Image (cartoon, rainbow, N blue to C red; front, side, top):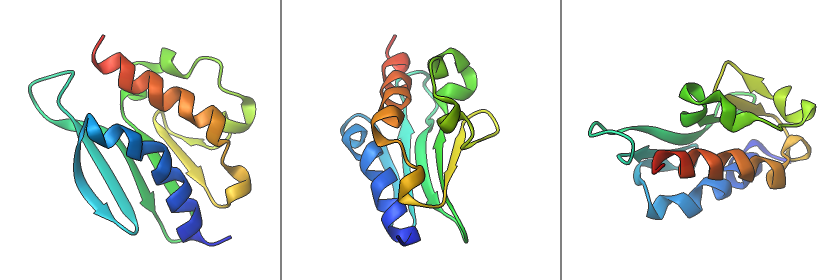
Length: 112
């Protein structure tokens, strides 16, 4: 599978939240959603970026609230880089059903 297909699959996980957050960047290689629910100053909610050899998903709320990642499988944790980024090189590495959970929890945490 191509890097573009990986990007599209991961961006599809974030697109349902575009109705609640502002899309700052939406290109074939970068989707950036900005949130204003948790503070007066706009900040990153989530982003997907196609890099040279992988696609990164940034989920900023888990940086400040790591408890949102409780229950992640070892396979998904192995994809983590830093505190709030997941990297994927192939479609087979993307646990879409499992990845939906922290994305939803991150969104829900903003209005809590």
